[in-house]
Image (cartoon, rainbow over all chains, first blue to last red; front, side, top):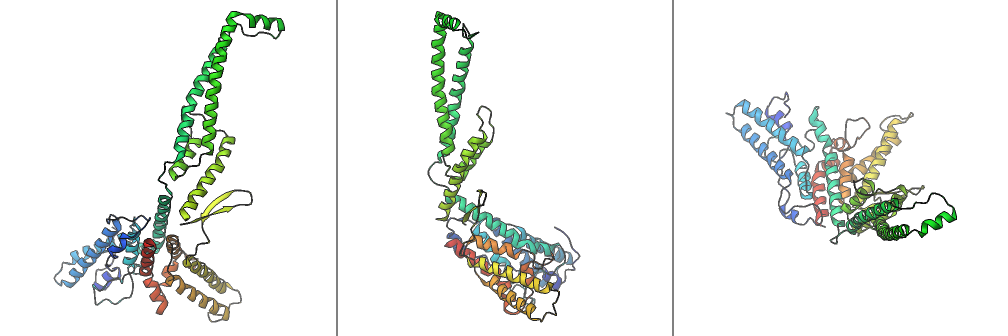
Length: 299
Length: 132
């Protein structure tokens, strides 16, 4: 905590004090729909609000105890200031926490705990006129909370658009990966056999070609080569079909979208790359998938 | 939360938060932004006489109406709550000193009360949105 030069008189202490608010009705927390609500209050903001309330009560008790040690009074006031800082800077993790926080900072800064203090400021506005870093903390409160609430809304949207069915993109990725190995193996076999031609062509004279084709060793090699080529043709067809299928398969989840992009844009050892033409083919698929997801979230 | 697909002339597409939302707080924010701009423009005029001249007074009156609406209109969407909070945290006078919330808190009477009560009002709106 940052120390300051404030003399802890009753007025100066209370000038920085905010109210201890009643937490928002627990019943409200039970009807939070698809928003990130929690059935049990695990949101840290509730503890922060409670701590603020306790710190305020502790200061009021000390102020009312005329025998209190001034050092204890100072320590308590600083504890209260730290509690207010926590209220104004801790971000809620649930919508009900955000509502509770707003409800809390909208309370009169003393909430009736100090009847002598009649200033009309709230927890949120009490630091407006203090010319130090506390002013900035209070000024930035709405922006911080806006970011948090916006993130909660986005998370809720993403949750709503996650379907219960498995995302088909994972099967498409798996099929493409699995088809790649046979494609590579058959291609290597074909190349190896090609390199083993007992009578490789050296010139294009018709007679020489005819003699070469008539050799029994060549006929045996040619049969083996044709077999390898057929196997590779089948493997290649399966592989290209799998690649095409991947490029037109629309992910149905946000995680699936990410998997799609990482599969086509990242490089993994043992996988084939994707050229720019293929990536261009992927774009309409991704655009349609995103449009469908957002459309689903809106309905 | 909703989004709109924006198509650029060159064919590019971009998803942006929907501007067609019916949340009344978005209109209140837009009106306040415009009213605030009119006040700043009124003060920046070369031929400005004083705070009582017609243009300045008219702009100030519009701004006060817009400010009251800003702090009393209940958002009906989470995006509206976030937009309101973000707007209230922005600079009120282009001087990096006061936010819109802080500046408005200095008013007296009904407007000042509305400003101080706005977190309660926003908490209630948020709770209704979440429940609905």
